[in-house]
Image (cartoon, rainbow, N blue to C red; front, side):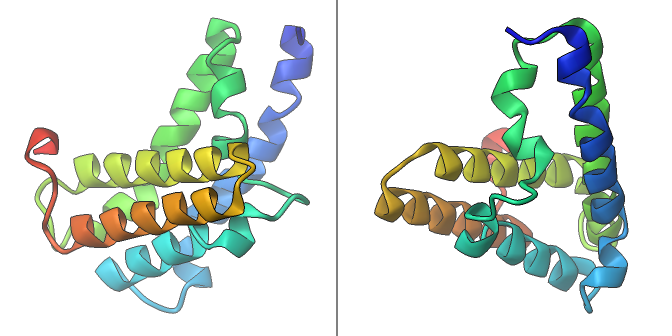
Length: 149
């Protein structure tokens, strides 16, 4: 089991990744729903998931953080909420519930990547990614599941 110091050593990398997410508006040449759609497609792309050099810490650490100290879980929670902010900003014009949608989309994206990385069957992980991407597109096209509204 890792100590608190070892667990928190992943936090600087998480913060760097959050800066990348926060500046996504400058990386992706789109805005509004189009930007969010492009982000979903890039994040859930199998090439991104297969990337072992610098995996997204929100997906990479999700199961590990759940078993850590309260301060580590609190930091992860703040990072998750902060990562949803650019999505929220891009969807605010189209949806009154943009914050809820951004949190739901981010959770779905992180979960999709985490599961795809955990499954050793390439066909299954690609299928999982496709389903997550289809769900994200539907959510952007105002088809949020009733239980999320």
